[in-house]
Image 1 (cartoon, rainbow, N blue to C red):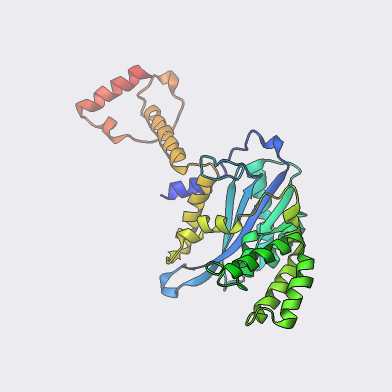
Image 2: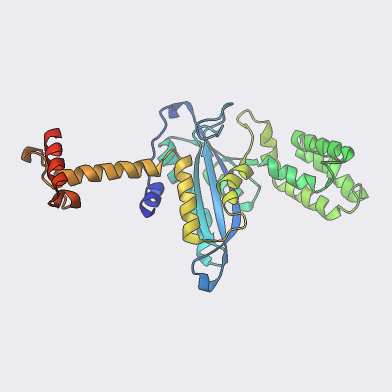
Length: 317
């Protein structure tokens, strides 16, 4: 198992052949928090897991991994929340992004688009990468639904929610002036004053991220679904040793990033077997390519089958 994990962590990535067609890397990032332990005797501690999903665009049909994202790749960082080790998490995120883009897509003058929930670290990442920023639409809808809790069953709530979403997408500043400010001033939505003020502040801080919905390069956002499928779905009602959790995520990453650790492991075993055959001198002397002191017990025994196998291998090679 440890060998498989090491392969999953490796950098045996192949850069796609059609990379010349693309000039923009889209990055979807989000944080989640999970309880995990290093030592059971010391108890569980909250850990921050930062997920990064990379792609070069979107297609209409799903690929072999069930994704519509072009050349989708995934990476993550894990840090203990109580530790001061995460003070440099922004810099580590920047380094991880540049390393991943170079490994997965090659060296090129890439443009970047960063999509997230509007957290401050996402804005810092976008600034450091000189990237365009997008507010994940799921999170905008999530904050808006708080105002209309009966939107599923109440037609009036549902229509009002649709009206608010259409207005904020069209012009977030106009929406604040003509929808939220009057609602706050005249208490148009009873019992939701705190939520209205929070929503106003949330939209003000993410105006550019909302305006970018209109851009030609925008094809949607999937930050929440990415982090759900990659991390949250595997940790529901479970507490892991932090190393085990990291190993699970690394294995999942390898599959998404087009590496099959099991196949590489089997190939390594096959190579080892070939080396063992040569090192036991069951081939002509002139074919002595490998010089490893590896034993195959059955071939060194006195059993009749050992002699038969030696003769078979000698004749084959």
